[in-house]
Length: 123
Image 1 (cartoon, helix red, strand yellow):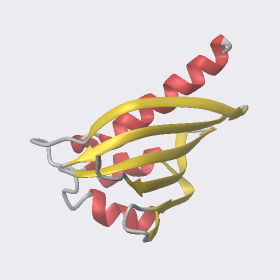
Image 2 (cartoon, rainbow, N blue to C red):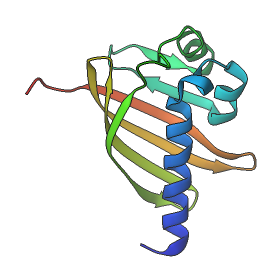
Image 3 (spheres, rainbow, N blue to C red):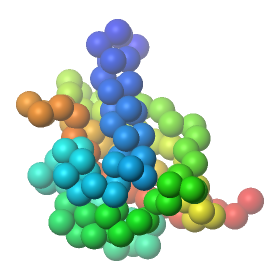
């Protein structure tokens, strides 16, 4: 991986971790800074979200400061210049899921364009 690609992947990882931070999620203005205007998500529940509807969930305390989302195995691949695909495993208070995020670089920085959560099978 080139240095430029490594920097892009690391920037997307940093942004993803910021978005999972309970202090960031509690502030709609900070969440919006990380979401692309065309943001969509297909959640673990199967529900489809957009930027407006996801703010209701994030600002509603979906991630507790006492029990932050536990993330493991996060890795990324540059799909095209300015587009990074991240995958990882997340445990949010016992709700376990495989996660996939598409980040794109814009004039205002890295923004989450699409996110998908898939329930993890029980071991």
